[in-house]
Length: 402
Image 1 (cartoon, rainbow, N blue to C red):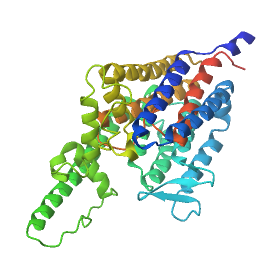
Image 2 (image 1 turned 135 degrees about the vertical axis):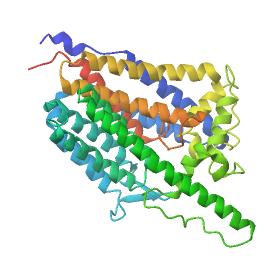
Image 3 (image 1 turned 60 degrees about the vertical axis):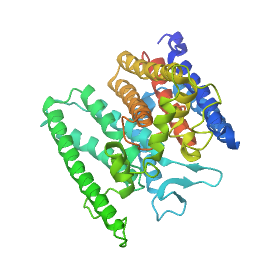
Image 4 (image 1 turned 120 degrees about the vertical axis):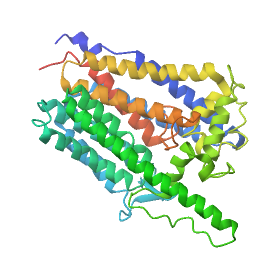
């Protein structure tokens, strides 16, 4: 191997990442300027730590992760198990157990599980010969098991948003593995059936809410949580879906479940071409966009209000470059494992971009998925840097074969 190959370094993604991090710090500060929140300082700390992780992971030959995929995956699953109620270090906030308390800080194991699951799946597909569905049933069973276990554990926390990331990633990896088209036809049919079942459940819930409203007019006692269904979905999750498809049913006044979505759309819509100006946004600073979400899940709304269409388009352009460059690097990979990893990371980021930005402008339901490198969050920031470090490693070591 030519020693100069180790010096190869793709500059496009790091430039985009650093730019997004700076934008994130600026607008986290802006979102909290009215009440002097210090989240931007903590975000800066996590960004610095994340850059360290990025450099270390990018230097390591990504093929090492192929050898230790099982161990990495097991650590991810153990982390999810530690969030369960029986765990002494699990931490509950707002009705969800998504964190473990390590004393100095709290960690969200879901992010580590995403990394472990992606590496494990890529390793299985890289080592397996996939032909027809009949010949690949064993491989499909292993891949399904690898994905379904973390999905179940994350759903139990509950964290519906994070579970939505997994299906697009697994189908993308199976697609680039050239699985039989019959599998995808069957999967699409199952997806349509699942949507139909979910739609029937949501319709029943909406009818239940309307019936409650009629009962409340007669001054009778109203029970909000007595809707019965065999689907393992909580009512607040149904409310989020209804807020997207039928906001007048779940929140006629616009001051309840649909409040965040409405205020986020107002933020994005009032920015105009060039925005209201840095630190001059009103939705977050006046509290219309709640303090609890303005700096994380709805950071794009703050950006859109203060920088307008031009600033939003700039941020979107950076995201598109990261995803497109990741797919380009997947094409440059000389082995199936590297190709699978780069594709998986790119699709995972694409899902986060689409769902988060979509929910701020009203084209996707509110799920709580953060925006990479922009939203506040320690565990999420670190996972984003590690995943992009893997992509950089694939680029740097693409010619390093034994």
